[in-house]
Image 1 (tube, one colour):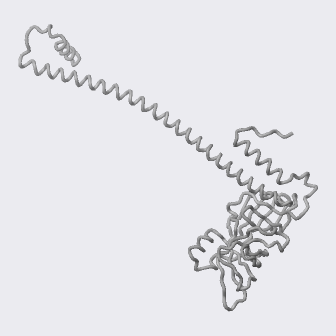
Image 2 (tube, helix red, strand yellow; image 1 turned 180 degrees about the vertical axis):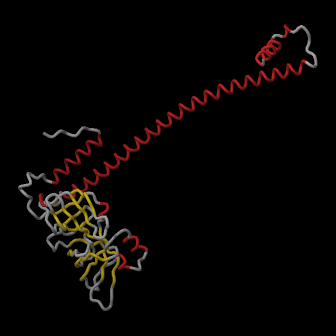
Image 3 (cartoon, one colour; image 1 turned 30 degrees about the vertical axis):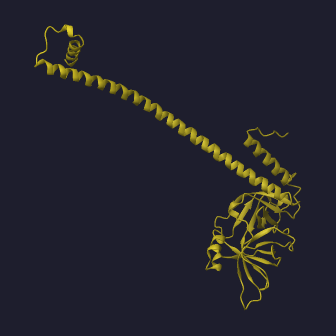
Length: 313
């Protein structure tokens, strides 16, 4: 019915010659209303068509958006992996260069740690098979890490330099005053802490004390403490820690010098162990640690560059 009315009105308006007589006052409002309905119907039709096309286009945009998000996540994972590989390669090169200065240095990978952080212990993947023995010095490019507490065939347990029972001959790098570093002190021993001291001991489970330094010695907070080399285990001049507090008591002939370790075990990935033993011959031919580290560094570098690793015969 509406369609016939719309068609009649449209013919009446578009083809005025079809009219036999002028419109009366009664017919005119109906014609105008019909024309308005035609205009509204046309607008609704156009709006409906546009809305449908926009709905279809919106669905395509949504699918494209999902695909782009998936591609962004994949690229982000690749970037993260590449950055991690670069950091590992940089750390490996630093440790490799550091270990090359020690003829008996064995580069070992950290494979475990002490979850309690009370003793600050590490487990590494080298042991008696490459000549590592209990008591051997453990170093990193940042300084002294500690000593080997126990060694098995393929692993070794390391205790940090600031642990209880640690005794190392050291000296103040600036003034050259010598003393003995003893570990096992809680940071609470230093309370109350100044803002500088609080920042220095934050996150450190234990601190060490440098003993047997005369109370008139020139030692100040911020001085670097290094190994003296008198023990025969640790090479001389390796950083051990930083002086965080110096206490001069009138009734004591010696200073109380508190030292924060130079190396944090929770950030170590590789360490250098000064092996004092003889590698086991029954363990098969051993590969020099420096050569193995160079090969590993070359392989990582090749992976970063997109090259295939060289096939060894």
